[in-house]
Length: 211
Image (cartoon, rainbow, N blue to C red; front, side):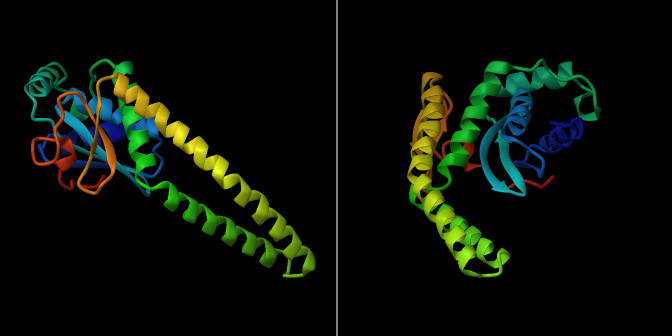
């Protein structure tokens, strides 16, 4: 997380509009750190998607506690927009936001879709092996062996992925998050007090500006 990313995000948030945080070099941990800071200034994590890196959506939190926290922090850290001090980092909030972001990323594609995408990737790689070895008999044998080995690993990777996803779901449930299905049919986890789209839910936020 760079200081520039933080300042750009805060400037966008000062408009009160929905914001998208985009960085080609972001990791899940880095965007979760940005989400923690956003919460301190009255915004709430809404969603994430893969684009050029990760693209995280943030929307203003209308809750009275969030409004009070934002007013307090804007008053206490008036130079935050210009490189000044920020509120203390909150490790517990970071862990929950990281879990929520990770879960959302893993929920964006079904197990069947993941298998199809992985199968196509393996097939393309096998074809590349053949092309790289001048398409002779040896290249076909090598490519065939690679294809069979990697395809046989897909079910194991799928099981590992489900366990990975379940770990974060359990972490969120233990923290009081509620499983819901959004308008696209995707399973999401709402924080305590969150509501479905159209009732003050952060998942209903619109598109913001790009950074």
